[in-house]
Image (tube, rainbow, N blue to C red; front, side):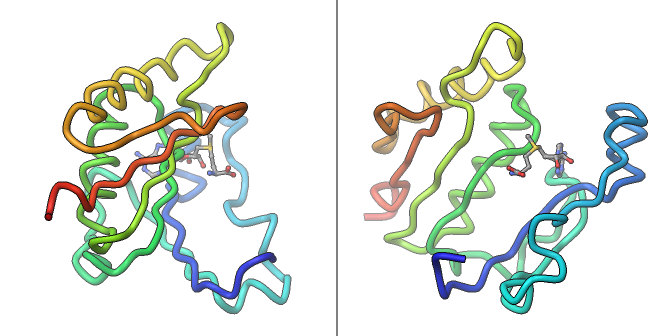
Length: 140
Ligand SMILES: C[S@@+](CC[C@H](N)C(=O)[O-])C[C@H]1O[C@@H](n2cnc3c(N)ncnc32)[C@H](O)[C@@H]1O
């Protein structure tokens, strides 16, 4: 609501999510924007981040927000695609860099990002669970 940007989202469809994680995950993605004025500028894609065809989006994104499966192999896959999706001055934001004991699987985010910070600048956003990265440094 606070941006005029065009937004593209990627999520599993409800049935795939429910099959992977259980019946309680059979919810509709996008329920917070479907039917609102903002929905007109949100493109909603469905697919698994490991198999999605990213070709039309490569190098076109100002910002990629990574917040799907938080285990290490998924965070690595999703982040490697995010690096290719952003343009030279684009940024990546990850949720759950800081995680609670209730969600130990989120340690994959911190583990991957602590490695990443050795190859391009990545920082925790102070006072939040978010981390921010500037992968453009890899291309300069
Ligand atoms: C923690 S929720 C966050 C959703 C959204 N960022 C939000 O804040 O409302 C994680 C989402 O990642 C999706 N997800 C998990 N694994 C995925 C995968 N392999 N490919 C695509 N989406 C996935 C789930 O379906 C779920 O909707």
